[in-house]
Amino acid sequence: MPAPNPNFLKALPGISGILVTPFDNDDQVAPQRLRPVIDRAIAAGVHILTANGNTGEFYGLTTAEAERMVHAVAEMVDGRVPLVAGVGRSIGDAVALARASRAAGAAALMVHQPPDPFVAPRGVVSYVQRVAEAGDGLPLVLYLRNDGIGLDAIEQLCRIPGVAGVKWASPTPLRLAEAIRRADPGTVWVGGLAETWAPPLCAVGARGFTSGLINVWPEHSVAIHAALSAGDYARANALIATMSAFEELRAEEGNGTNVSVVKTALRMMGQDCGHVRPPGAWPLTERQSSELQRRLGEWGLLGDGRSAAA
View 1: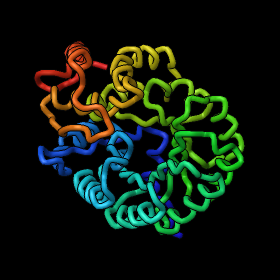
View 2: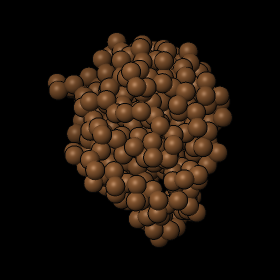
View 3: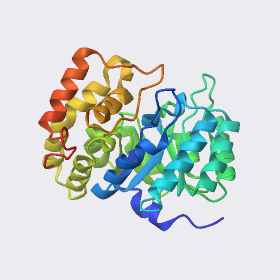
């Protein structure tokens, strides 16, 4: 098996920025609209970019669209930072996306946790093993949104050859601490609940975090990561408090406005990436839009598109 990409392993404890998927007025994917978003995130110092994550409406894309996105994003990133490609859904789709992502030049695969209503813990292990085989040496990051599969299964998953990290997207820091204790010390744990949960997850061993904010305000995410890396929790929490209204808006309607807030913010900033597909909420309500516009103005993100000082 080829050795994992050293740049990816070095970057994994950093910020994993989850890119939106742009759509045009005919509801077709429009990857080129992402170019300014990608360029700004890289310039700000975001460590990793991810195509086909949940902020990218992965479950709203066809497999063909997801393949197109990973190829297009790889071309725009052009090796400047490691690109992680989300794969998942049926095992056939996941295998096809793993192969397409490898061909596109992705540095690693992020394996979405199967949402099947009859998922079995040992079935998840088999699922990830199949994806690892299809990836043919690409490192894997497990995306765990639900730790209900149990710590025994999580321990088995982390032993699968090629698993380099775990994106822990459950608000259970004590369970995370126990999972880390059981795992190989070389496994990298990433907080999967964005900036707001980064401090408690970091405190028990998650050395990086995911972010949808990087589409809009990457400089602020980088400042939060720098504070946590320095052990300055007071500064990190103060910076998080500044942007907490953004995440609160994203959590409304059962988290159905998660991507809608990001895409509306980009539209307000003059970097339109289109609408959000059902079942996401689109458009935002008048109240939500007004609150978002007020916050973007406070943060200096309107007008010339430049951020206020973090």
